[in-house]
Length: 353
Image (cartoon, rainbow, N blue to C red; front, side, top):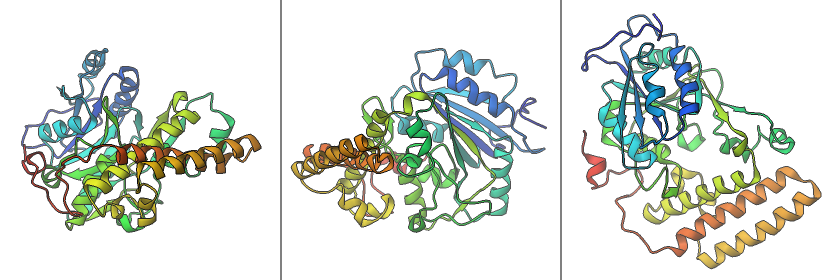
């Protein structure tokens, strides 16, 4: 059986809930849902597709409705804008024992769902799973971008994830962890650890890392994770994301996120990377802006000389410092984060819905 002949399941019998959160991306969503409709679904697997419409004003609803004869799709609307709000609504609505997360700008490999289903059966002890993300650049791609797309800092911007063709344990200490476009969480653990609205993209902020924070907290509490090599997605990168401006804006959000985490959750460098990484986003606003200015000058000088990759690294550092400086200059908020990995007292994190 494949996704073109969906079989309805009783609410208490669903094994896997696939969740896509979307907001005003109807054209991209259509392509993504077409790939979902092409999945090779294992015979007898009970699953559902949950689309969380995060307040779209375009024809997202019409696009979703056009797949009702091909997919076991449900649509829920979450008016509170922000990816974390949308994810939490999806968690509340999910009927499956496991939740598979993907995005509205990716295309799923035909064996994606089957690979996750097999991994769940093979590793009943595990709570977190993740698979490969393959960036696909839409043309016309600038020469400098294409030349360095397989190197840092562009690999992070493109959300590239690849850890080989063999299943291996996930681990923050080794940098082996999934990202938001392609990961899965057992629903029981997911409902105990919800997504932090102060993280994740929204109309009011451009922070990232809402999924990394959740995965870290689950694993820090003893949860086991596995890399699922055959659960692959292609991440479609439009031309507007292949610019110097987008590189700057993306890493500005990374710097703001890291500095925010270190402010409200001391010791967050264990999640974000190394202590050295966190040292780059700590300090006074003045010192951070000064470092940003220095790196901006170095970027401009090396870019004019043609040292492209080194230039991108300088631009990245400038952006990270500016993002961190914005946090340093802001009033200190009162937040519910605790020591690394511990549960917080915030109701949104404790209550299963």
